[in-house]
Image 1: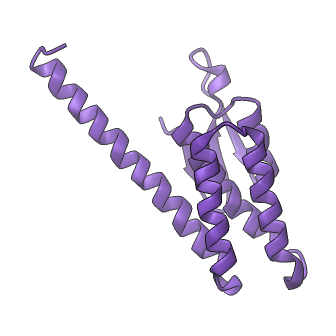
Image 2: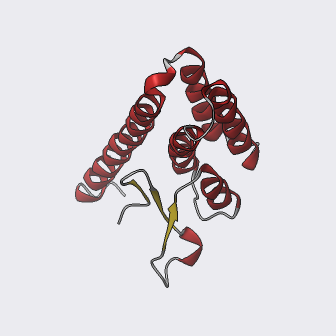
Length: 147
């Protein structure tokens, strides 16, 4: 069961409020839906909140394409600030948004969606690697009856 998945310009989030009785997913097609998912605690856990926000920024970049080019960067920056303010004390959220905002500032806007999607995917993969390492270390402790 994946808690979060990017699929075809859509973020799919496991609604953690409904666990363990129900497995339900929220489909996010806009960054505002991601904000709502973070705010209502559908997404829990610092790393996962950061990952959701990273993909939320990709959705903001996609949404910005409907605007005149002169307003796209401001739209994405505004979306990042709104995402950060959903949980002001969430360190991972703030770090991820700041990283993506820096990318936004220095990026070629012609490829902004691909640039932000690569960054969000990299953040997601990096977290998965860390989680796998934690799990593998834990398995060894149980196998060797150290716990």
